[in-house]
Length: 138
Image (cartoon, rainbow, N blue to C red; front, side, top):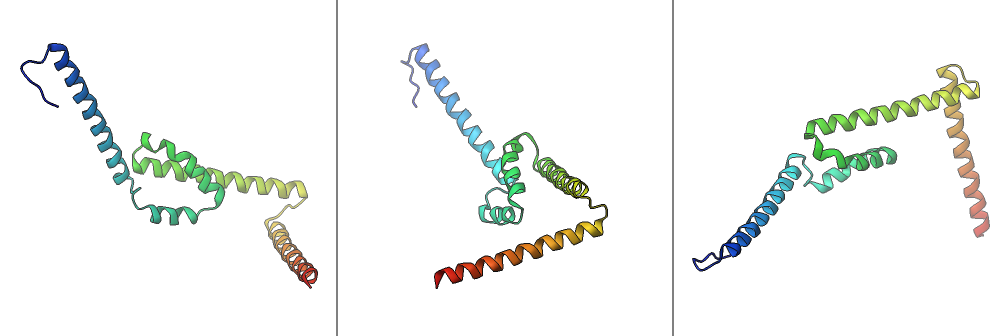
């Protein structure tokens, strides 16, 4: 954009306003870039691999909380996420213990035995359904 001596004062003010808007856009772009670099968000594949290590419900929670990252520093946000995930895991454990109590299970040994029986029953059901499926194909 060029400024000349023949420009009216309104034209000069308009040109200065356009330059200020452009500079604001550049500052915002720079802020976004530093945000990505500070939080190591440029390594997409590395971050994606770390995400897949989490259970699906926790992964979903992390994706929903990601919106709040801009309000914290990187360390604060990591602590925030870890505390929320820890609380979610504790709620899961409490729900399981309450379920055991409703079923009449009173000790952790009984709960462990129940879980092993449940896994065994599930595997037996899978094997029998496979056999039925194979017979249907013949």
